[in-house]
Amino acid sequence: MRRWILFAQAVLVLPAPALCQTTATDSQTLQALLAEVHQLRQELRTTSIAAQRAQILIFRVQAQQTVVTRISQRVDNERSRLTQNQSEQRRFTTAIKRLEDLRYRQADNEGKATDEQLAQMKIRLEQLSAEEQESQPRKIELEEELRVEQTKLAQLHDELDRIDKLLEQASRTPANAPQ
Image (cartoon, rainbow, N blue to C red; front, side):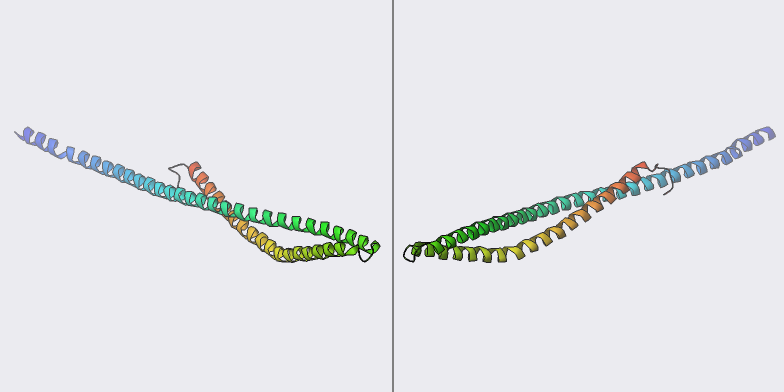
């Protein structure tokens, strides 16, 4: 009988430490898994936020590129208008000089038509000069605006490059490495 009591005690007492050890090991494993899941969730959140920021930046870059393109076209149009104006002024100046030479050689009665042409050409030349005086500051203003918008675009590109490098570094970092 005493054997049975010893046997019963042995059966009941010996498994208890083994059971406690298993519970502690399982608890540590669960804690480690929980910590890893938490870290993965945090990394996923960080990556998701970075991707959203990158997408927002891409939209901003596209919008800024549209602004730069539009202003660039306006600058090109203004330059073209100025170049055309200056070319027309040179043409009128040459024509006026030619008519003045012709008028100098003509008699007074023949020169009335030439005088009218000269007067009209001089008026047109003055108009062209006035247009140029108005157009020059507008062109300068547009060029300055273009430089400002190009600077903004370059800053957006720099920000995109920075995010790209951060994401690239994050993708190269092993998941179990300390950060």
